[in-house]
Amino acid sequence: MNPKFEIVENNSRRWILRGNKPVAAITTTGIRTYLYPFFTPGGTIVLQECPADHAHHQGIFVGQDFLNGHNFWAM
Image 1: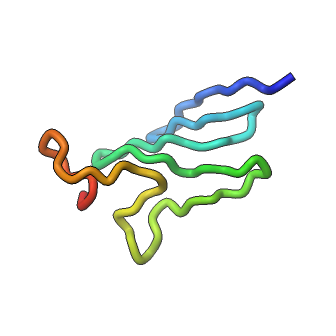
Image 2 (image 1 turned 90 degrees about the vertical axis):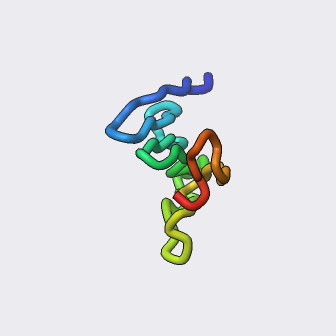
Image 3 (image 1 turned 120 degrees about the vertical axis):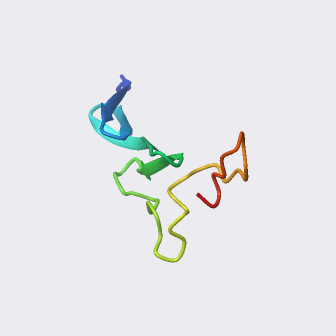
């Protein structure tokens, strides 16, 4: 039997769990929504939230320039 997926909210993150183990989280800030963290089946995180050399690159996000007046790329 495969464990079911569950979504649990905690502050600005909606955690996606599978059988009490985190799979990923959808993070929402005042600037953008992005996927971080993201785990392998073994539990290793495969993303950085914001690397030192590209602080505006957060996890997995959509880099859209000016959508409805918002610049999701340059923040």
